[in-house]
Structure formats: structure tokens, C-alpha cells
Image 1 (cartoon, rainbow, N blue to C red):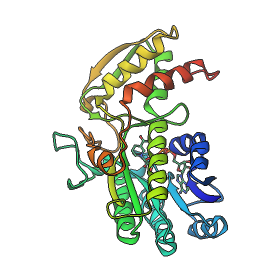
Image 2 (cartoon, rainbow, N blue to C red; image 1 turned 180 degrees about the vertical axis):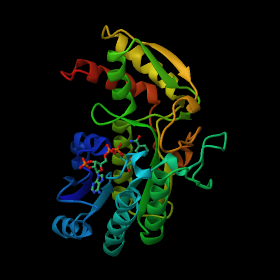
Image 3 (spheres, rainbow, N blue to C red; image 1 turned 90 degrees about the vertical axis):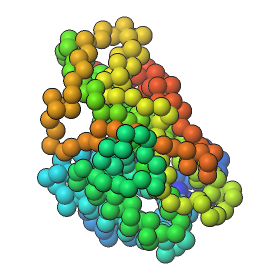
Length: 302
Ligand SMILES: NC(=O)c1ccc[n+]([C@@H]2O[C@H](COP(=O)([O-])OP(=O)(O)OC[C@H]3O[C@@H](n4cnc5c(N)ncnc54)[C@H](OP(=O)(O)O)[C@@H]3O)[C@@H](O)[C@H]2O)c1
């Protein structure tokens, strides 16, 4: 059995990958999930030690600094987690000829294109988070011939910190909820991204590494929406569980100031992933119902 190393064990995507470990087993991989403190981008020696100890045949890096606003005041820590740390892991994979799946973000773009972004479009991050993720993906692309960089967006999951859980919790505390209606993107269920990674790992394992396998791919839920319509869909799904929906008020980005600027329209065109790997993530709203059901049925007081 080969080892598939997954970093960021408590994160949303890593949790989804953990649930998919039986599928990785079918393709010959036993999953080894690692997280802080044993694997810490702030302590580069732990990257080397874990790599040596686990001798992976495949690596998926799901660890990252994802606090977009906090990155503005903690750029060094964001750089270690999103840029230099992943690059060190990528270098180890390159040295050992191991395929490396690394996750990046729609926030590498400024959102001014006015149409879904292609992999060939020029990035122009608006904040430190996007800038550090871009620096990381560039280093990994340069270093590692066998790297697959998946840019995703608006991840949600049954656990962790995400928009679905945040608005459901807010909806319990207030009758009126103001939600930004002029930012557009592609919500992505962590479970759906996890399934896409299973398919990519299976493809590379079965067909071997070939030209076209590597590089940057956009990998987000199909379809797009605004935060406001996303919130509306969340409360619609929650209403099946008898949860009263607050009155939703659409507001402009200018009415919801944040430390870091966000792209107004970071929709991703995922055609390349479909063409190369035959993978298309399901429509974002199709998985949303399952995730909301799970949250509403759980004992959590969300
Ligand atoms: N969330 C989104 O909406 C979104 C959108 C676009 C792209 N992405 C990308 O998708 C990937 C997965 O995101 P996610 O939402 O699953 O992230 P997440 O839930 O925030 O989890 C991130 C994980 O990274 C770990 N981590 C943070 N700093 C670290 C460090 N210095 N060393 C080692 N581990 C560290 C965290 O560890 P602890 O548990 O110890 O804190 C956490 O387990 C990331 O690359 C992210 O940039 C996310």
C-alpha cells in the first residue's frame, strides 16, 4: 500500500479528504493526515521530518493560512503557510519524483475581468492572502514538474469556519441579516473538491504522469452566485428543518468594510479540469442541501 500524505488535518478540505479515505484505498493509497504541531509550516524542519518519516507516494497540501483579513497584519506567518512552506514541500516532492496536489485560490485575481477566469488570465491579488497564495503557486510550478495546482473558491463544509455555518449561526441571533450582494463567485463544497482530488489521484496513478497532467487548474463548484443569493439558498435549505429565516437585506461591499479587499467577481472557468481529467464539480447548490441538512440535524447549536 502506498502512502498519500494529506496536510492540514483539521481543515475543511482535509476533513472531506479524510471521509474519502476508502476511495483512496481503492486506488492503492493509505492516507496519512498530518497537522500542527507535528507538521507546521512555521517550523520548516517538521516538513522535512514528516516527509522522511512517511515516505509518501503522493502528497496533497490542504494546509494554508486562510484568514483573509488577518493576513494583512500577519504577512510573515501567511507567507510561511502559503508560500515558502508549501514550496519546501513541493521541492521535496520534486526531488523524489512524487506528484503534488496543491490548493490555491480565486483570490489571486482582482475580480475586474467581468467574466469567469481562465487559468491563462493574469493574476492581480488585492490583498496579502491572495499575494502569498500566488507566490506559493508560482514557486511550486517552477520547482515541481509533477505539481497539480487547484485554484478553488468559497469552500463550505459541515465543519470548520465558512459562510454557510456563519450565516446559519447569525440567523439564530437576528431577524434581519445584511448580506453583500455585489460580490460573485463559485461556492465549492469541500466534499466535491475532495471527490475531484480522488479522480485526479486515480487518473495519475492509472495512466502515469503525462504531458498536460500538471500545471494550474480551476476547480470550483459549477454555477455561480452572489453572497446574498448564497445566503438565501442556505436559509431555503434550512427551512426544511423548521428553522425560521431572517429577513435578508442586500447590501453593497462598501457597506460592509473589511480589512482586506475582496475581488468583486472571482468566478472560475473550470473547463480545463474537465478537458484534462474529465472532472466537473457538481452544481454548488446540489451539495448545499446535504451540508445544511447535516448541520441542522447535528447537536451543534448553530
Ligand atoms: N476556505 C475557502 O473559502 C477557500 C477558498 C479558496 C481557496 N481555499 C484554499 O483551499 C485550501 C483548503 O482550505 P480550507 O478551507 O480547508 O482551510 P481551513 O479549513 O482554514 O484549514 C486550513 C488548515 O491549515 C492548517 N494550517 C494553517 N497554518 C498552518 C501552518 N503554519 N502550518 C501547518 N498547518 C497550518 C490549519 O491548522 P490548524 O487546524 O492547526 O489551525 C488548518 O487545519 C487552502 O489552500 C485554501 O487557501 C480556501
